[in-house]
Length: 191
Image 1 (cartoon, helix red, strand yellow):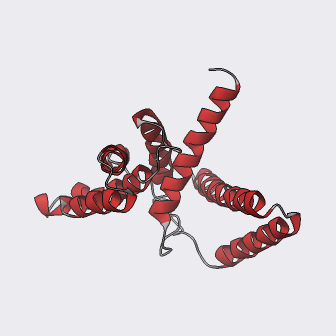
Image 2 (cartoon, rainbow, N blue to C red):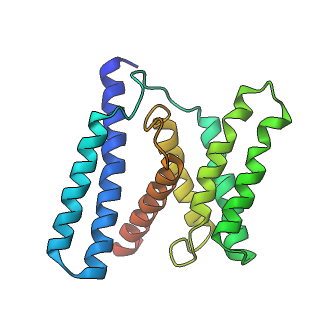
Image 3 (cartoon, helix red, strand yellow):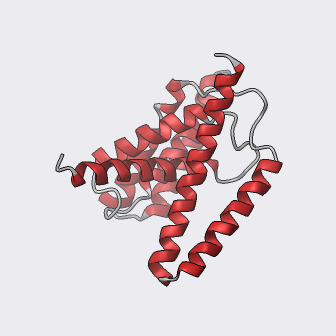
């Protein structure tokens, strides 16, 4: 893959994440405060945060891709956490914490395996998806769809957002938003 295509992929991923977060914040503020002035302030603050992040590097110069076999573990974490959260009724924090704790021991199965060392973040990203309540994620099919989108973003964002906290939660959030958008579009057109 040539350098210009890598840059395009990198910037598309960054702008997609920014757009999702800004729209989400905008809708929360608008719904709760019913004020256009406050919405404008949120947009200005979001733009200022974006400028700050552009000045600070969000990624390495090389754009690396996560291996697809690592991203396949996102649904494992998502389904496990969703099951503990909603089906067993233990709640989102216990569900995600349990899945994250178990995932942290995966590299110990074979300490020489480079592959196993990459699995805990993917499983934990899925655990964030599984924290969704039944009002948002109304079943395992939704969880799989959100995992699919988060997996794509994980593969594309291997070298993005390095050194910034919240990357896995952001990817999980974006996956849930994208799955919700697909569900909304499908229900709007009667599919």
